[in-house]
Image 1 (cartoon, helix red, strand yellow):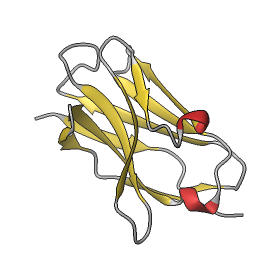
Image 2 (cartoon, rainbow, N blue to C red):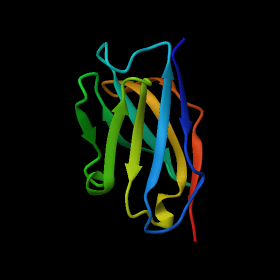
Image 3 (cartoon, rainbow, N blue to C red):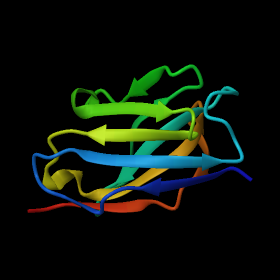
Amino acid sequence: QVQLQESGPGLVKPSQTLSLTCSVTSASITTGYWFWSWIRQSPGKGLEWIGAIGPAGDIISQPSLRSRTSISRDTSKNQFMLQLDSVTPEDTAIYYCARQTNSYFSFWGQGTQVTVSS
């Protein structure tokens, strides 16, 4: 069973950078045809796809967030990371990592709450 686990600070100050890591077990992030994605859900809103990294290291991202988003990976640890720059309180959300095939997300992490506040 593929498992994903998010980790990172739960509180970030406005204008700073949000950094999260997703650790993957029972699947390699460098093989197969899946993308490894970041998704968030803000209070009272639906799910918002942020971006993803493919097995070859190719990256796709949401146009509205692209200028602030950086997705990378550490293949030695089978982890992929999200950085979101210049955060505001509107970036407060539960952040999830997931395995993606086209528009379908087959495995999810449990999610981690990130609050942007001074």
